Length: 187
Image (cartoon, rainbow, N blue to C red; front, side, top):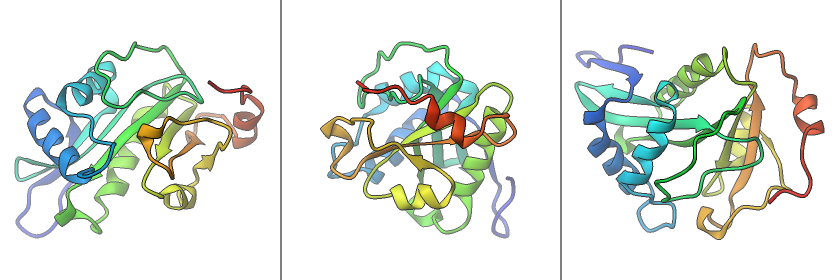
């Protein structure tokens, strides 16, 4: 996705080192007053784990949104605020965080970031997982993600957090295969 409102130079591109202050500022604003704020070091560590699956929404040279994802075992999730997560060789890509600046919401940028993630995931990953926070499980379900209620999440993700996943379109994995591979119990 490139372009935007008249006169704006807008595009979705890979994260650069110079983007981290803007990413950290957006994250702080998005999760102010919650336990979800991680801080720059933790965000950067997730970006370093998989730079080819992390993107920013760049509008006129400013970070107006971001998406961070990294390979992580299915039915598991990175710890919040932890900057030393181990690297994983996994066919599951975990969408750790997506934020669009308040003034840019409702313009399709979130969908653009997700489309870019899906395109990046297609050659290497079978699934994309996420933890829906702040009661947004119904939003993600409307986009094809399936809840896995047996996955226990720590309190740091909030009361309404739900682990969800979707098969990567075009990966050859069906949603029914996803459910049959669910390990129980999950820890």
